[in-house]
Image 1 (tube, rainbow, N blue to C red):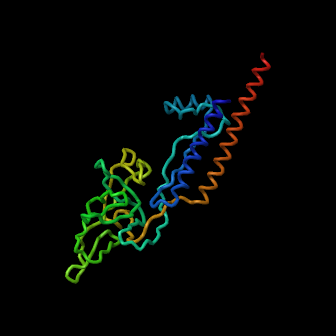
Image 2: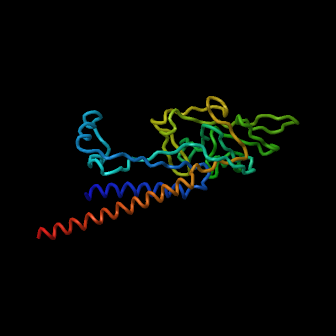
Image 3: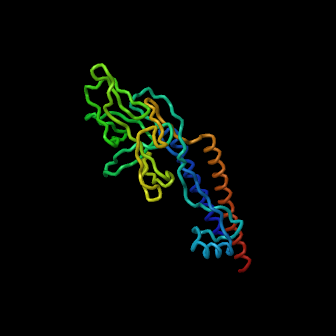
Length: 257
């Protein structure tokens, strides 16, 4: 009884923490909400069947039918957030599939939907954390008004006519759910995601680039708040059951004495 309640309590605590983090990042550009994955507890017969079929079961799963759901990890909701106009020509949003590529301090490539870019002192296009867009985009200091087209072409006027001076390249993966999420709204390639595939925006199922726009967080505040209240109430109920169970055992031990 106590073991079951502890598992349930831990499950609801994980759920509350994840939902609270989603709500805290509702104003974070490009943020992708985490979704809690729960697994039903199995009884001894189901445990035996799973062992014979799959060679194992989720941790803590053999607790008996009716013991409820257990925390089984989380996944990232990769759905697109709302695109809002920022009037900053270097703010870039992806309308559709794909990720911007940036180089993190250790030299690895990371991928993000947060496209708040700017020019550094060398004319390189960098994001708000100073990570350089890949492949490198260098804007000459004497460039006039620069425009980023939906296909990623970066254009400016040269001798009275428009010329391409750079190109935004997007990345995508066979299984975006397999990406590893790290800090600063960045993702890393994994074996589960498959190898990165790059291309020009608007081609090969990649979305188009919208200059002067920012993709907002995809957290739905109403849904997140409702789920958080439900998780908090479930946590309170499981805590009460755990306390009542302890009291029952205390009384049973007193009777035995």
